[in-house]
Length: 158
Image 1 (tube, one colour):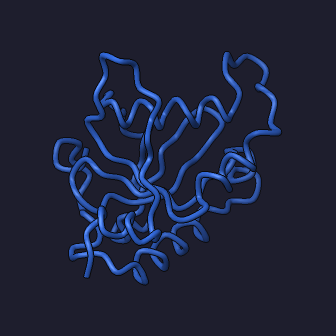
Image 2 (cartoon, rainbow, N blue to C red):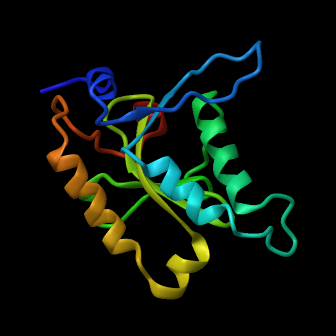
């Protein structure tokens, strides 16, 4: 079994190095499955800003990642939500136009497996495949137990 740091060292996870200001420190850690960041950016880059929005989907993705890493509060059901079935311990980070899927392996750490424009998920009701993909990836990852934290209490997870 391995720690998150070891999995990064051997290329099984990629640690997010957020672009922080000189007076900011990372209060939380965020990791991507191999290729996940590039895959999400590839899906979001061609999308224009939706009518009535100040930011494009790619900017929203970058903003929520930044907010998580610097420790900003993420409101339940607005910025984050545990997906059904809740016993699978799969979470989504939410922006107005983007959904990001992953899980919490330990307090103040999040692993991202994939993301999708919200319109695609609403249109096709595609949440179940993402939940299954997170569970499958987490299951094959050689991570120390417990591989995922349960519960929904903000202070216990984030």
